[in-house]
Image (cartoon, rainbow, N blue to C red; front, side, top):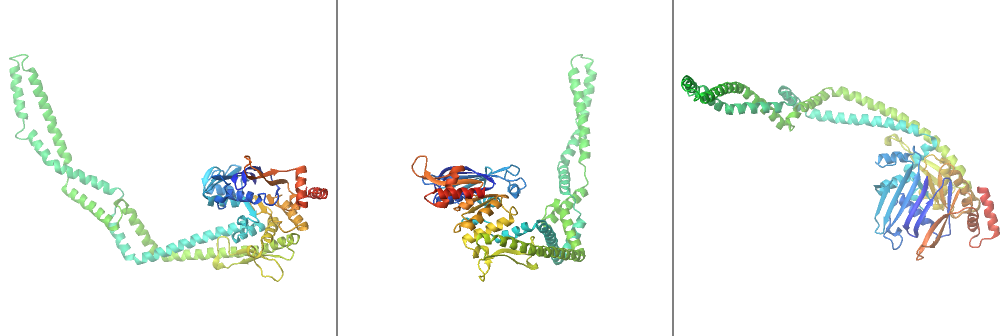
Length: 558
């Protein structure tokens, strides 16, 4: 329910903070005091179209904030989660709308910036406004089916139909895709078979291209340096090798070293080291030559394989590493084509069976809805006489056929009315006048109670043009309705105000700077409330008789 409303610089309202209670709240005040402004501000917070003219004169912007307490299992929680907004598990929900004087607005849900469209959808889940602001009332034909299902407790039946519809549509979609695939495959059968045969013979393997490329590169590099390695071997081990010369020199010096002790030992040591290094170099070059050896035929085979893979890649327009999966895909297309007739027949039979089951369910649901519609009509009609609609008729207009089947069934449901005997019946929004429409909606809401309803209902002057017993009947029904949901009623009827659990008085006064008019809203009780109900009864001059009558009304209402 709506627990608090905060308004800043909206038309005549400079600053207003008001708390709302549960049950029935009556908002009263003299004509022109600003009741419509209050509803305009609330509508703005709920996502209605912004208007720069709503900003109080001399100000650059206005702001409206609304706070709601909503049950954790209310659909609004799922809406918040589906739209990535916080508050799905928190008890309170905060809505805020900033209106700039240039017409632009900003919207926030639980302090998260959002669009006016999302705010409007959330607002529709939280509040319904009936009367002068019918853009928020549940009078759209698209909502009538949901209200009927809620009244009859048919939600489980609708969910069963929805599941069967989804199953049928998924199977039918698969059938359409398979049919199209088989038709396309049939047109390309020869190409597919040739391609599959070619790729099967080729047999591409995952990672093969990189392996072949590395192998080819290594062999080509070995081929390139093989000549230099041969030359090195000739230098180290061939006829021109320095090893024999160094070895002979070393022997001669070793023989002479004894004749001149201490003179040749260092030279002999270095020559020995040189011979050892040269010997190791000879062994290393021989090892390198053995490692660099390759079969030219292997290089040729490697290149042919690599070039064949890359040619196939260019031909089929896929990377080499994807050739294997590409071939599998084409093979599956061929398998589907070869087995398509049998699979297509089986799937066609499944789709037909799912459709048959679905039609049985929707026809059963439609029959239940017709029975519920009769009960709804009887219940609403029972409320109409006391609301001065004794000559009117409420009608649930149903149409539909199996050709226009949806996840909700086949029924197109609209609420029609006939306001006078012999007149043409038609959609409630088109046939009923403003006052009649409000009373039809009140009767409907009383019958539906808390089924299919927003947690807060606002009725804007639905008692306009009526009085006496009719106004009292409206007050009784608003009070009854408030036992299930929160009800706010902007009213001129003392019979309605007297039955309220909370009474809020709207009045005009001077702003804080005493420079202009501002609208105030005050919770009133006891004698102040008695005086206001008496004013509503008597007008400008409040008499003792009016006070007595007001006291009697309040005792009846309380």
